[in-house]
Length: 311
Image (tube, rainbow, N blue to C red; front, top):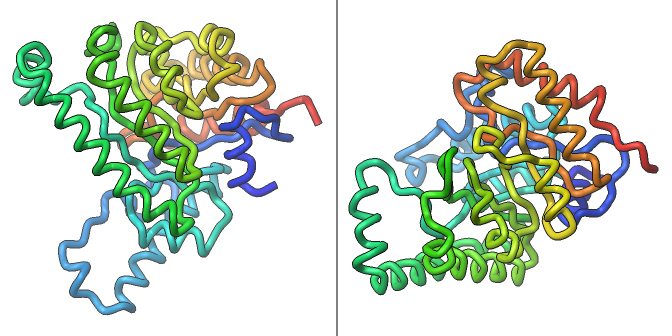
């Protein structure tokens, strides 16, 4: 069974043999792990002016770097954002499940816009609905040609809705301004033959029922820093949606080794309890500043203990 097949089956909540699949939404530690610049940090303003041989060399470097960490840490999927050329190169070189990153739905606004956006929620709802509608239209138009070319297997929808204490949107506002557009976008991606992973950090519990009703194939990152109990979510919703994540990033970065080990094992135990439908990974990503030795510690426990007992 290929990496692509294992990951797709897991998102369909079907049993896979051997180890529970793993990936990271993003992996920025390529310099520490491989001695190579992270492809997501590489931007070329003169790309269109380059000779084909130069573009090919850069794409090969990016693809080989991504495949290098995926192979080293036994990931099954790669998030390539919306880079069509890189998708094509990775597809040519490997059997990995390929994800794009595209989410038109409203997320927590940044600090410079939070007051303005919050006021618009109460005072300018009609304009926000028009904006939401256009964002959905644009996202579907952007993803469709990638799906048509066979470059994609799924989409990561990464708009963050929640703080650690609670969602930014009340359940009522989420139902009005986010959920209908999220559901429509997911349905459109499904219509293209793509699977969907919906990501949000923080405490998603007050809106979890709405998220599941929008019918993503999987939820990520089930953030323990937001009080999300993987075992409870699995019992309540694991028959309707696959689950990804839950290893506490704060513990990985600064916690005691014994606490990290206990948390990693808890995530594995709780996620694998149903026998299917779980992707092991951090509760965020392998971000810049996360000690590589801690990520490798997590990987080693997964390698030794993340084995399904069924055939």
